[in-house]
Length: 120
Image (cartoon, rainbow, N blue to C red; front, side, top):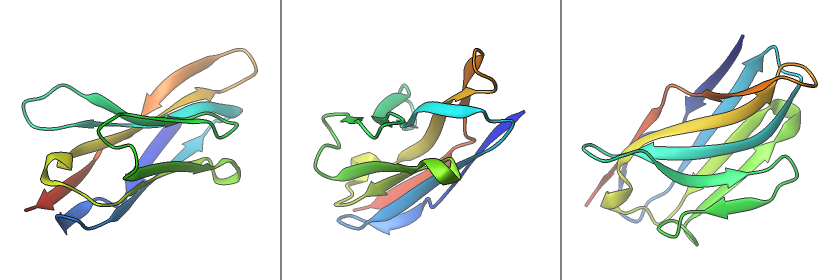
């Protein structure tokens, strides 16, 4: 079994910063892509950022230049640095990871979500 545990959410003023962490644990052979999504009240879940095992990154246009995704492969952990936060960034943030439990079998796992609230 594999678990993803997120931390780092909270309440911050507009213009502030937060750093989210997501640690994967359990029966892990390797991890391919990792990423962050978010879901605001009444809206669909949307992709925020992804990072490959080699460190290549992609971002949603709405967060480019403000958010930075990174990972520590030795710790099976992905991070999301959120800078210059805006009220519209308020959402539950979910991490996900494409985990191989052996050399041929993989599935995507999700964290439980962490709330980020940005006050104006």
